[in-house]
Structure formats: structure tokens, C-alpha cells
Image (cartoon, rainbow, N blue to C red; front, top):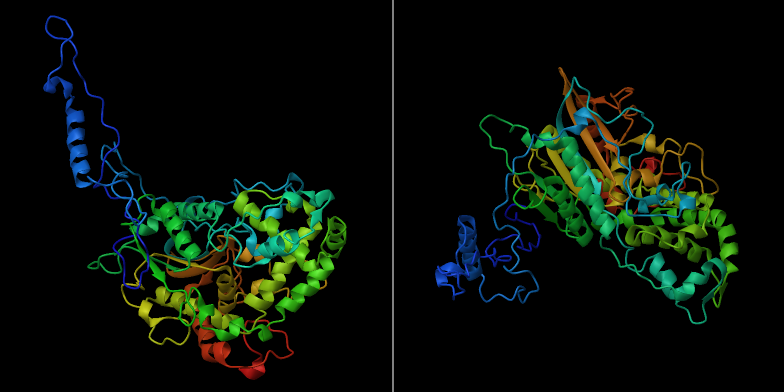
Length: 569
């Protein structure tokens, strides 16, 4: 990060400074023999007789020590002082090569979930439990119906990439199902587990809350490395005009701990260590009543109204279908407490969170493959009806970010702030329009909302999700849309005289044939002018103030496009 921007709330550790004490001194070359060969007391000169490099190093060491003299190695604030510098010189040769551009040469796939180790019975050639954990799944390369790779064609030149990514794997939110199970079931007086549940007699709840797990940090570091490898050459893109100077890129995130840490881990992977002077990290405020396109639910009241969704009821109906057998089976193996269906669902949640926090979990093998497929579908129901096409304020929720996407593509600043866009962050410094690569960090529910705003109806093609069974060829699968470290990005390319755009979600090309003017493309491309025109029309039709603030009722018609009923618009 370069010097902090206005509105940025980043707290720097300053642990890369070099005004400090040094590591161990080089060994002195001391003579212990006099001219006659007898042992004599060495002179001061001989005791400090060093070779040339050691002398130079000693001078640096003494100077550094003097500047940090009196330091105990840690300041009263608990932060590192100058005793342990990260740069003492003597680096050796440091030439680097040209920027990688794998997006144009060999677009990679991704499937690294090490060091997570699910039970072998739930991870085989035909089934992998990590693909059936809904939004708690680790991200991996998926397919959205187009078999083409996201590799840029040889005849095309990539102009711009905009990335919107989720944070990495985290602990449960405060008071969520796993903690509830540990306290109200295992922690209840008289509880005893038998059979498969005997391990609960010595169970210790080990999960934190809200923040990234170590695996979550790894995910974002790896994502940063991946995007540098795919799109590194965009850092060398020329400025908009021959007289302009390209500034450091601005990446955006929010003030919530896991959001900030996700972005910094991404930066460490993308830029390498130290990354502070290679870009600007804008940390926007995530707090109730503050407009923020990366956490827009803070001001869109209707997105949080329980009476505007049938999601919880549908989810409970489905849980009673797919978990009844497990509830009966596991209920026979406990004493002192009567398990509920919600308790059994929380046991599945415990497995999902322990996998990404601890690497493994004894809860996973308690359920069979069909019960894990049911767990995934429970999250599909949740996200469809609460956070995407099936909730009437979701198109408005993603509106602000899509407006920003359009501004970056057209290079026209936003002049009307009629959504969750925040004018305080829309200055030429904080919201530049001359970058070839943009990176924004957000939450799972915002990615699913943005898909709704973009009108990417291929995800809605199988229609509203029933609560009685899992449909064949289901188009809306949460683990493919908003897993941990989910990443949605647009590619804008020029191919001769034509400029094109396409969208990539978790490495899968998204069909755009439903978008006005796009037509069918085996590689997911759409003429850029046509897509921009369709998005201007789409965003202009969404009435944020009404969809987010008006106290309308849900109505009896199913919601299919993230908007209020047509009779209310």
C-alpha cells in the first residue's frame, strides 16, 4: 500500500522498516599468536580484524543499533519496534522476468483444498463433500454450461478486467448454528452420546467467530497469485493518453476484519512481499446506514425484511424432507436431550466449519452422500429466495456495483448517486477510471445479488426451487456461485475492430445469450456496445428507492428476477 488515501482505515504495522538492531554479527577473524608463535593477548585491532564486507556490515549494524538503542524489541502498544528488521541489505541478485499472462496463453484450472482432509468415504471419483457445502464450500473451477475455457483468443487483445471476489473461509458468524449446538445440546446437563456420537462426550468447541481461518488466508493469497499469473501484463498497460501518467492501482474492500484481511492476503499473493508501495488499498466503511456498494445491505432495508422472503419456510420444509432419516438415526444415540431437525442440521454446519478451520471433522462421516446433497440444496433454497433472483430487492442490492462497473468500462464518472453508491468514495483519487485491472472484495450474498442485477438468467433457468425434491439440471447451485473465495470477473477484449465482453464466475464462462443484443456464443462473448446498452437499460429500470425502501408486500406471484411484482413497479 502506498501512503494512505483519504477515507482509508488501514492500520499499518510498520514492521518492514529497517531502522533497527541487526541479526547476529559476523564472526571476527582474531589472531591468538604473537610473532614468536607464543600465545599473547591480542591487540584491539586484531580482535576486530574483519574482512572488508564484514567491516561494511558492522558499520551498518552499529548505525542501525544506535538508531534503535534502548528498544526492548516490542513497543508499549504491542507492535514490533526496530529489533527485527525485514531488510538489512545484502539481498543478492534480484532480476525479475516479464509479467505473466496465463489468461492468454494457458488459462489454469484450480482445485487446491490442502490441508483440508474430509473422510475418504465422502471424497472419491464420483462424490466430493467439499462440492456440497453451499456457500461454505471452498471455491474451485466450475462449469456454467459453456465448455469453452476462459482463455483469451490469440487474435484478441485484453483491455480490462474487473474482479469482484468474496472473502476467504471464515469461522461461523456470532451465535450461529455450531455454537448453538455446542451450548444447547452437548453442553446441556445430562447429555451423553453413544455409538457414532460417543466422541461428543469429550467434545470441545474449537471454532472462533467471524474472522478468517488460516485456510481462508491461504485461499486469498492463492487467489492473488492466480490473478497475477493470469493478468499480470495489465499492470503494464499504457495510460489513457500519451501525456498521462498511470497511477498506482486502487483495490477496494470494507472495514470488517475478514474483508480487510482477505484483501491484504490477496495483495500479498498478487504483488508479493512487501506489497505496501505497489498499490493503494481503499478500505470503505461497512456499518449500518452508510452507503457502500460492497456491503449494500446496510442501507437497503427491504433486502433484510423477513416478510419479503419465503426462504426460511422453504428451507425448513426441505430440511424436514432430507434430514428425517438422519434425525431418527442420530436421535437414538444420545441421552439427556431430544435432538431436533435443526440440531441435526447444525451438526452438518459443524462439519463444514471444522473442515475449513481445523482441517477435518468427526461430524462429516455421520451423514451419507444423499444427506450432503440435501445440505447443499438447503443452501440453494436459502440463497435463491433470500439473496438472489427469488427476493424482490436483490436487483436493487447489486445495482450500485453494476453502476460502478459501467463507469469503469465507459470511463464516465457517476454523476447521479441514486443507489448504494457513495459520493464520498467517488473522487478521481479513490475511484479512478484509468485502470486496466480493478479488484473489489465483497460478501457471498452480494455476488449472488450482482448476478441478479446483471440479469444473468441462465442461473434462473430452472425456475423457483421446490422444497420437496432436488430438480434435475438445477441451474442455481450455491457452491458454484458464492463459495468461500468466490471470484466473478469480466474480460473486455478487442478482436480486430470489435470489442467484446464476457463474464467468468469461478473460472466458468457464463452464458450471455439472454442479454439483448448478445446472441449465442460458444465462448460466452457479447459485443461490448450491446452489453453496455443492455446494462444501461437494465440499471435504469431498477428503482432503488422503491425496491429498497418502499414498504410494499411480497404478493402471491413467485419472484423470478430480483424485483418487486410487476404490478408494483
